[in-house]
Length: 247
Image (cartoon, rainbow, N blue to C red; front, side, top):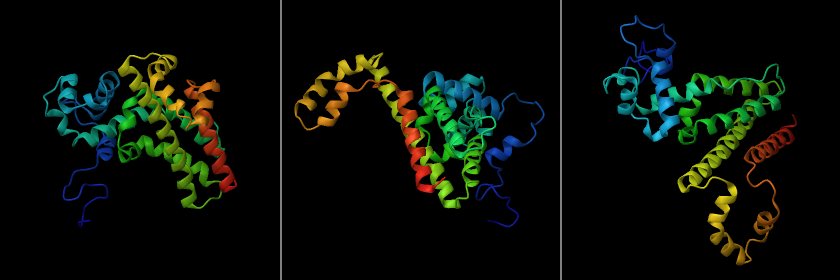
């Protein structure tokens, strides 16, 4: 790092990081455009029109400013995504009075699934953008702290946290992907989806190669209960961590 350069500044520039700029006192109100307004507008666009619709031109149109105006506040798409993730992640709250690691991680996991279903564009965000924002770091810190008090070494704490996070994001991404697939085809229920896919399934099952899957198709009673399936899988992950680490 060059002499005199502050930590967090971009290499080769004197530009403060996005989050440093966000925490600075607001300048004199010579302009109504702020990082908060940009984030709110971008989230609204993504929620209503999909993540791909969030472009600088569309954002400028929504905010009623010149197309290049936003570039005075954000450096590009990564900054914009980070602002969006940080804004919606403020909805995640630590369970009141919770101290047990399992209760803390489970609460955040359930909330994160709900958050991703409410904002499905989160499912396609790059992992570094999702994790490296103040709100996301605060969520991670709360969970890591709950694990750390169990007397685990630092590597085990992080591995356990990342295992739960990976399950949550992977499961939610799959659920969002299926929901969007159904919407594209106009299928409004699990039964309607299964009827539409029946020719493929009937052929595959008729080969006799998938007897366990066939048994599931014939006898399962929770095929469309995604919340139950998520909670069950989450508890399996937490049980495994508890057993492995003895906590």
